[in-house]
Image (cartoon, rainbow over all chains, first blue to last red; front, side):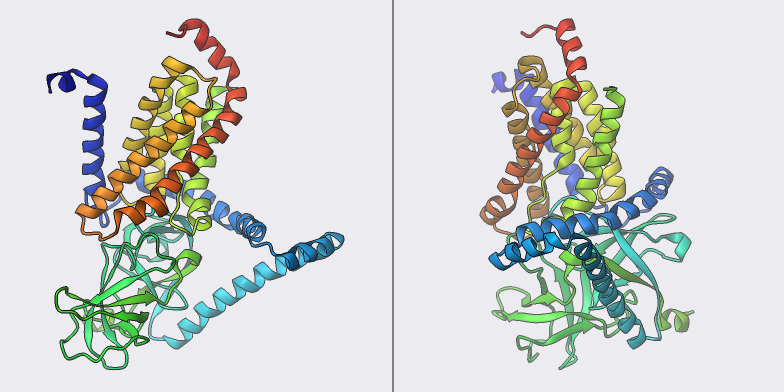
Length: 281
Length: 171
């Protein structure tokens, strides 16, 4: 024991690991950003936005390389003769995809005229697999405030947790620290949905709990926000019931597959105005 | 090449990789850390202090731009810089296996700390699944990245390494 205590590098390493563990445990999801953070974020946000947009071409190229089949190889041989045309097709494809994503957002806004939105692009994502957070290119200057709901064309994405002048950080609903008040669309039974840390699973997962004991829940049931709590508007799609596990031993009632594909999310909308806010005031 | 320029370009490239490209590209729970790899490589080439300084500043920037836990990455990369600097004293910069292994081991430790924190914080997961599908492949990727960085950075920093060798001969 004395030898271990005298081993300076080992002691430094153990103390460092202990301090890192404390830092990792520190709850910092919701906090006010310092002036330095806001300034640094404000300066770097345009560069991040540019780099994010430039990434689309790189990502499409890399995915194309890894998704090569025999037909693709033959196709590529032909495409080599039509390099200029291919370039035009690629650009058109990128525009088509962007158009589809924006159309989905537009459809969503048209379906919910009572809400007002600010459209944003994801410019950075958390650099670890342990947290599901990301940074958007909108902030206080665009009217975004803390705890505002973030949605995509398919459903609920998360809420704003930290805010700078021209950027904000969002905690996704699949993060293990997140809970959302929800209800089953078919039966109108209320409950809570929370993020689940599911490493090694190809699809994101949430768990549904606190449902009434007589709730008739079946796989495929749509889960929507209940509006309780005032952060998320009522009726926004959260997910679909994948598996019902009502064994009484645990509080879990079901697992949900979120409607939003968080791995391919690029554009989102921050809800900056809800009718409930007006009536409260 | 000027050391400051190399550090600045490395920082910009790694911040881009960690906060934008890797997070979108790696969809199978494997997220290598380019900043950790670069910190280790620069530390072995330049010594613990410059490496730790690079790690501290870039880690802080990463925390401000992309993460929600301010200071964790900075502290981790300062530690990585100091730890990798230990090998700079003993093995100098010629070996490519040492930086790659160091980066892999440090990534492994970092992820284990995160896993412990996630577990204490209420996360429920199988440690075996996490090890096999996220941490170990991530450590291998991080080691490979570090080897790549080292191959690129070593010739660029050859003059500084030579000067350092002349000042402090190997033990």
